[in-house]
Amino acid sequence: MYFPTMRMRRLRKDSRIREIVRETKVYKKDLIYPIFFKDSLNKGEKEEIPSMPGEYRYSLEAGVEFAKKLESQGLKSIIVFGVPNIEQKDEIGTPAYTKDGIVQKAIRLLKKQTNLVIISDVCLCQYTSHGHCGIIRKNDCADFGYEILNDETLTYLSKVALSHAEAGADIVAPSDMMDGRIEAIRNTLDENGYENVMIMAYSAKYASAFYEPFRKAVDSSPLTGDRKTYQMDPANATEAIRECELDVLEGADFLIIKPALPYLDIIKTIKEEFNLPLVSYNVSGEYSMIITAIEKGFLKENAIIESLTSIKRAGSNLIITHFAPYLLENNLLD
Ligand code: PBG
Ligand code: ZN
Image 1 (cartoon, helix red, strand yellow):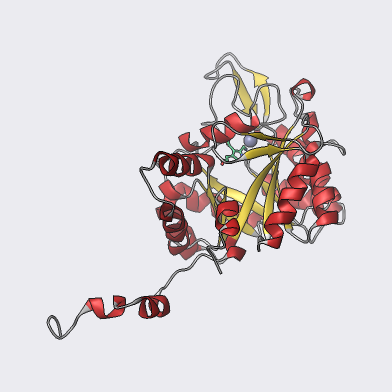
Image 2: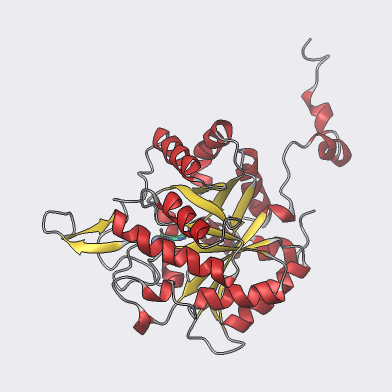
């Protein structure tokens, strides 16, 4: 049976019909909001991020107030990032794992004042003087005159994750891309009585150009070189399956694909291959492109829901996105 008997447009006839045949929907509960806490800001202060129009770095108190507001509008989870004082940065990223670090303070206050699911980004790059996600050692034969040490870095990442768990994080999310970090963190958490703290692994994290606005926002660009010896080559897909496989074996509870929009094929493949909750990171560059086009009038705001819907349609269960406040404030989702 085909035209004129069969007519596809019948299923698009009006908004009631379209609503009941719609296959994919983004819900408020699917959103994870990435929030930036900056140590040097005064109580109540926030600072606009030039590379990410409409987004801010918050002081402890201002950030928690904002999180409370989002929670009242239906937000369920938040992922916490820290911007430490510049003079505290060192070779080994000490401010990432001190008890009174900015992230640890933010987690404690969020835990006390909200009922949000608290996720913490576990990495060293905002906290190291060189801006890399791991410990470095001079090596004249290496591309930029130094190498990023894998196994040594695991010790520090484990300290960071433990300090976040101690502060009250529900989930830790390592974003460094060192080998073996999920196992190292799982063991450390378990040995310290945090066997119920979950690990959301940035399993397939690509060496992407779309992180640029974030790096400007949190001052985490590598001083020299790039992240290509640890983050994945954007050209590779099968390698993403191996990365996820290993993280699952090491004990990951959630898998993250990052970025999202330029990697929808990876999201789809990983959803088909693994039975874990899948998270996509709609990164800073994806946010800034769309928000800037909207500001300029080149796009309308409906581009936001369309792009997030495509991420869910590809197979993502949860989406980390800077668009969360816009969607919640305007009550655009169920
Ligand atoms: C660092 C980190 C990055 C992002 C989250 N954690 C960037 C990077 O690898 O340099 C990117 C987030 C975004 O662009 O929104 N480990
Ligand atoms: Zn990092």
